[in-house]
Length: 206
Image 1: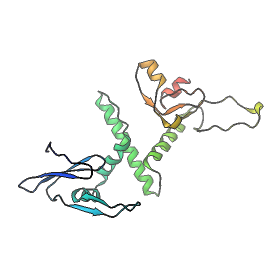
Image 2: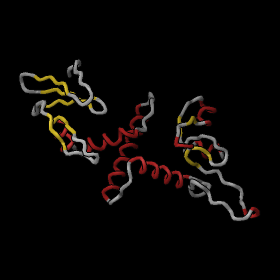
Image 3: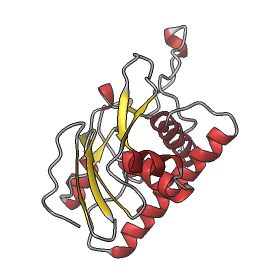
Image 4: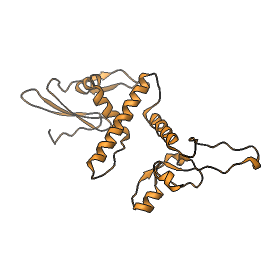
């Protein structure tokens, strides 16, 4: 692949060979590099979106998007919310890659059955359901109901809830036990301690 392709935002740069193989780079939000033996540097105009702004893309990019198969589409969706961690153990990378693929395929089934949730909303509901199944203290509730009378107020249960504004925080237990900095968006509803959903949350309150 040529290393000297330099295209600006909304522009293209390309190289072609004598055998009519073209290497084209187009910049949208990030550089997109395509290699094709059946296309040229032709740019086509697409129908406007909601705001009425016309868009233009290289023909090779449009043809790829229109003929994208399930594997390529699944990889594209999984790239938005990767769960892979930096690790030396190769089998851990395989595990998290398979986890991303399972989540993406489940989202595809949800949409095929008429679901309208975005990928972010679907993943939040999936995590909430897993926490509910794995919790030993009861069902998952974002805001536990309050009793009407003071004498009827039971002892408050510690439940996993989202951090304010869903910001990332360091897991207290991972740092305390292993000096490992792991980020989480879950905290305790009682003490406000930031913890990994599993297994740190249950271990901390055991």
